[in-house]
Image (cartoon, rainbow, N blue to C red; front, top):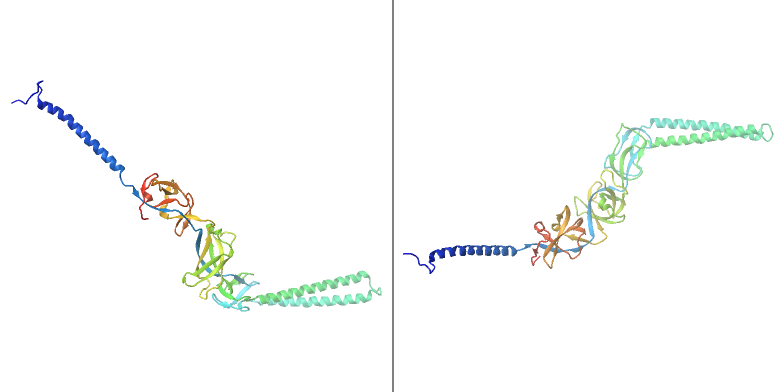
Length: 376
């Protein structure tokens, strides 16, 4: 049998097939558009990135500078002979304590004593010439009023006496100098202290002033530290300092800055600073390592943020600042002025009250919308 046909003679089955194809295409297109709309909606409604933030608050400008120093005497002298010669005896060693008047070393004084004897003989000869000139002058003084000698003859004898007297004075001074040289052959401590170094041995020939020992004078003990250039301007004479021994921090005392070098060391580019202690601990010995803490004031309050808030923008430091109204972050360059105990000190780029991102900055970009958890 044949399928039914309408009045025009067209088969109903053929009509159904031709009508079903466009309907199928329309249905597929509708489903596709519906899926795309759902996907776009899903993308737009994707959750924003969560971050942690903090509100920038002014930090204290006060901070503590810590240095490692060495216990040193206030005065340390290099002691040597005042005359040249051969060392025949040295009576002290490193670490020995010496008292005033104690013999440290001796030189061979044979030549010095010979020079002293020669100077003594020269004094005797000069005195004899002076006495002869004095006798001639006294005789001339008696003859001149009687006109037995001329005034010029008297003047000659007067000049001879003056020259002889001057020669005697010079000879006596040279004799005293020779006697002093003999005494200088014995090196004696003029101040009490501790021997810190020995630079000459028996049998060695030393020059005038060449150091034989180094003597740390007894008295005030100090801490010597080296301060870098960036901290030099924060220190001043009289500033207080906390001092403790490196090997035993419980041994501590207070002190003050006594001296600040006016020129940096050419090798280390640091400034030498001396800190005098109020009461040196009994356990503190010369050469020990000490820790020194100096409190300074930066002069103005600074903003401090966590180190995790810093990022990089075009090779410079930057932070992400949150607009609390729109919950959008903006990248802002900042100037870092060093590291504090609790974060980075910001010199420029932020104001008190700004909200900065402290966690998740590596995933952010300028203009991104973020979500801040309720509990920070």
